[in-house]
Amino acid sequence: MTGIKARALYGIAAISAAAMYGCTGSKANTPAVQPVPVEVVKVSFEDQPRTVTASGSVLALEQAVAAFETPGRVLRIHAQLGDAVRRGQLLALLDPEEYAIHERMADAQNAAAQAGAEMARNGARQEEIDAARAAMSQAEAADALARAEYGRIEFLFSRKSVTASDMDRARAERDMAAQRLAEGRAKLSALETGLRREEKDRAFAAAGAAEAQAHLARKKRGDAVLRSPLNGFIARKDIELGQVIGAGAPAYFVVSLNPVKVRAGLPESAVGLLKRGMQAEITASAAGKTFRGQVEYIGVAADPATRLFPVEITAANPAAELKPGMVAQVSIGTGARESVLAVPSDAVVRSPEGIPSVFILDAASGKVFLRRVDTGEMLDGRIRIRSGLNGGEAVVVAGQNSVSDGALVRVTAWR
Image (cartoon, rainbow, N blue to C red; front, top):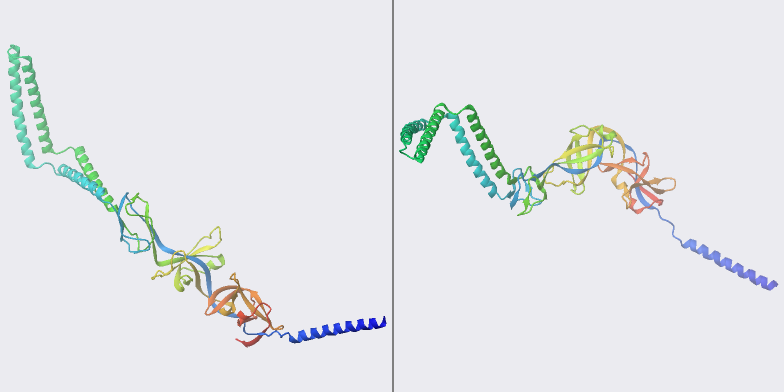
């Protein structure tokens, strides 16, 4: 038993020794962690111009719907989607034939009514009076002859020398001659004395109504032509060749893009710093550049849903690079100055979700740790830190893309 125990103990000792040797050899072969070289800067407060920043949307300064004021069939189209147009430029034309006919009829009726009004205003000409006098003289002679003939026939009828039909015919001729004489006297009297007041008023009213109808007919013919209401671009086209379109139906939507305006919402803490006319910078990533503008409108009441005050900034846009619907960042200079925390823009790293952070150096451990921050506007290559830093921290500004949270680093330079 003693020999067996001795051999067992020897085996155990050999296994233990081998295990110890293996462990020792593994540690010796593991490479030491190498610190990542970085450059850091100490965060401090800076005196900077006080600005107000916000995100907004680009809007057309002017926009209008172009529509025909009268119905008709589209005869010609002169503007297409996206075309640049000038105020008063021809956009489309309706078939004018029907309106031209109505215009000619109205002009003819107006001419007749104006002639009647002119006669009522100036009275009859002398030759018309002379002709009426001559006609009345003839009527008087015819009347005397008809009465004499009637007297003769009446006498003969009493003697039974003529028939009853002869008597009736003589009576009718006498009455007709008397009526013609009365009409001649009335016409002469009207020509010599002029129309009665109510007759003149009726003639003048008829002339005015005819003139208005003629003007309306000309207007309707002119309404068959559609022109651009402003300088800008065709943003929408709702008209086709041959289409029958109603009065007031939208045909085109025209927007003016120079200048444009950007509308943003600001909290009450910021809106109180603004005044109309303050200078602003507008940055639209889609346009790839920064535009200068000025504050044109400051809202007097907050939006009930967002509790933000509307602010509008206008900017020149001669090349139409800013387009309605684009998202733009606005920075408005207030003229005041303030002490702010800022770091070089390279120091800020972003997660795949776009969350901004910086790496803070822990001098005691020689490691860096990721800290989330809230950023603001750019300040000449530096970016404002609104929250997340207190000042005095050492922030990595070079090598930040080669480290991770808790990485060991070696500071090669302080900026």
